[in-house]
Image (cartoon, rainbow, N blue to C red; front, top):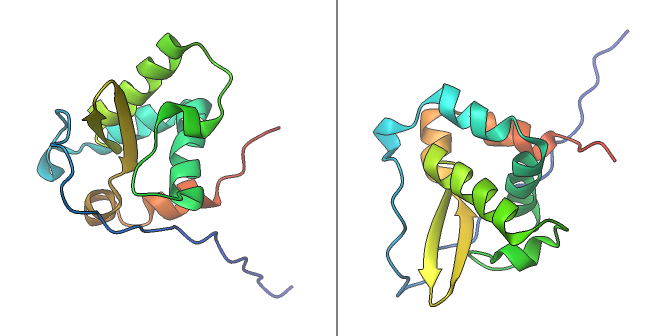
Length: 125
């Protein structure tokens, strides 16, 4: 039987605009640990957040409301913090809101192919 391949979804890379606020505290590229990143991605909601950022981003970064998740704000804050502290996402403070984007270059440098797997993942409905 011949092998078949399916094209994985295309990750959208949006260039960083000038004049952004400084990012919130996060691990450096050298501090990224596979077990920590995988731990953050082991939650289906966090995996969904990262996948949506990779495939559907319209701007450089997004607020919690952009995701359309029906969860309490405190729960979403926890999930976004877990992703940032693991080094998966970068967050910046814009007044009262925080916006997130995936650290694509950093994660690709440390763990080549990981984000392709996240993009190819299909959430259960």
